[in-house]
Length: 177
Image (tube, rainbow, N blue to C red; front, side, top):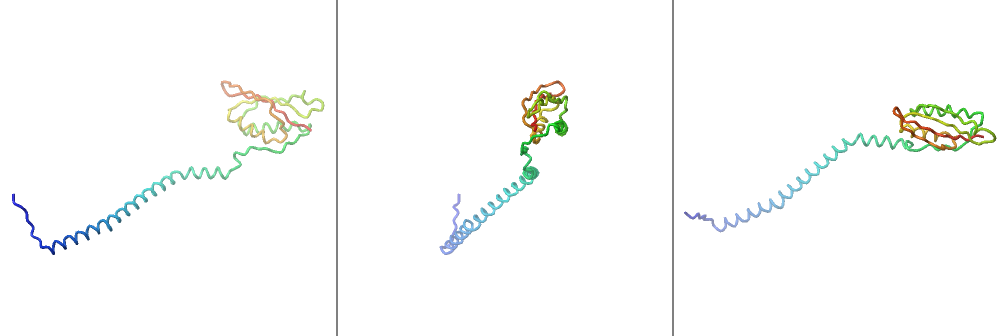
């Protein structure tokens, strides 16, 4: 095998080393950092695009939450100042109760005032109520009853599951003057 000899004079070899060093410095000082800089920007752009995509996908949820936040009184339960109703107007409760039951989707099976609680100087009148419907509607009914200012108390709630619907029995007291 023949040896490969390159005859380069010393001055050319020195130029070769200097130019090689300049190229080496140019690559590692200018081109490589510029490549890293561009790579980092491309990576950041990709992350921003992913964030924008996620925000676009979540926009309907965000708008729904904003709508809920605007309607802050949605979770506020009614708490009117307690008053008493005149004895002669005690029948008004039956109309109010029917209105509330109609709004909540419950069906009134029976609504009977207990007239024995009205005797004498009683300050309350008991109503025995039987309702049919869904359990979720009972909650709405109770919230609606909370808005009646002359409602004294709900003494008892009995819940029974029937084949067609749930049955709710309630003892409701109203305050009388």
